[in-house]
Length: 276
Image (cartoon, rainbow, N blue to C red; front, side, top):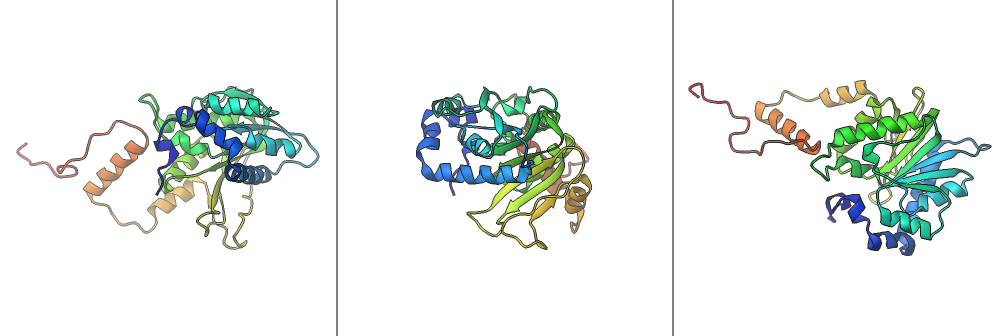
């Protein structure tokens, strides 16, 4: 199994000049990025007779921006990699682009955008690349500021590659905490290569999730992101845990959140002697 790029280096270092060059020379990467961008714009469900202003989160070299432009809309992009933005400038990408860290929040006027998309960027926010990074706080800053800069009744479609189910839960919980409704749309859930996950978020109250590709109408692999359903899912069918298992789970959760956690030992979860 290849190592996930998030574990190789922080995004501003991983996406250096050599890596950025692949996004203009590797036809397979360009094709995949374009296809996912087209799907993300489709899930935004923008009006046909209106030119919309779209926010591209993790815009990179501007490949997703090209798709937005082809659909007749204008866009503004944000990315943490200066090398990727330099490539976008060399390609003469049409959108306005800013250098910035999504985990620090977005500094745009309230209600400025008609929609937002993100391709393969969201999972980077789940990592603590620095001692000062707390994934929960960074995700809250990101989703809260994203909610604020979207217009009422608009959508954000975020394509990402989660490492595990816990990461999906962390992302959806923080999105709901920021005020979004919506859920997960999984295209081609039974295919290893074609499977793609989109977090489709709504402002202005609950809406019906779009249909996923590669599934029947009765068996769509969509996860409704409401706090009640998440709680029931965690509790249903689970027996009582031992003290050691409960402690271990809590410690693993703290590590995933980037918090300082005591190392495990053979005494973890053991009952202390009364004479101690």
